[in-house]
Image 1 (tube, rainbow, N blue to C red):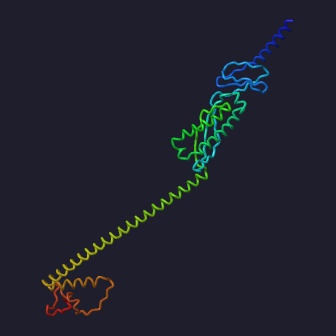
Image 2 (cartoon, helix red, strand yellow):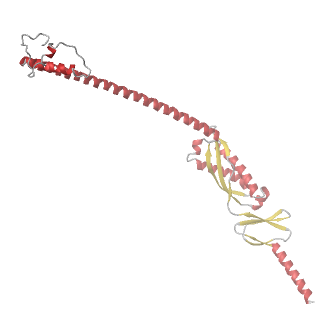
Image 3 (tube, rainbow, N blue to C red):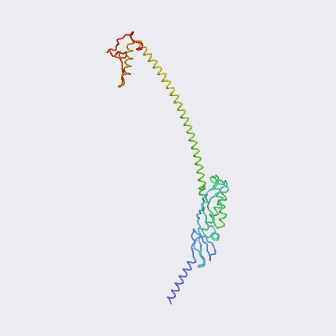
Length: 302
């Protein structure tokens, strides 16, 4: 009898444990819960702690209470000046009303999909009325606040609060960027050609000026050389004349020696002359004295 009672008590204890574990659940401080009965929401729980539900009939759906990230796909926007921009945004959101959240989007995946569409729509509306300089200026923060305000209006209907929306990057599309790059390169090549042309023109001017200065300097030097050469020749003639006037015999001897050096300098020189020619008049005297007097000297000797 005692054994049967023990078995019954054991079974009751197990049943109590099973029923208790099914009826009790814990909500973490970073979570919030929604109690469902046959798929229908019954109540939302935001406070953490140990909670009770009807066992085997009610289920619990947990949602994050913390801020969640949102990374919408890149969106192409046409600005008011008809320029196309690829805008990359990011945001953060928080589930404020679990019941409405469950009724509208169901889970975080559905929420991210809906919010991405809402953000991209607000992005096109707001940025479609501004120009690129406004996006890059101090007005950017005001535009972001306007986008966040419009998104929050739609997000509140989903039980969501948008904490932040930011524009990560705003770039031209690839084809537009390539066209801008080609235009910039053409402009730089044009400027480089202009600089080269200006440099070539300046180089020609410098060369022309240098050539002109060279011609002037060479002409002046040649003129000075001619003057000096003329002065030298004049002095030489004067010196020769004075020397000839002072000692005609020495002058004749000097002239003959110069003639000998010039005529006999080559190794293959051949001369056919008479031994008693006037050219050899100084060869017959070791003292360099000719046998002719001044009166016998012909005008050609002088």
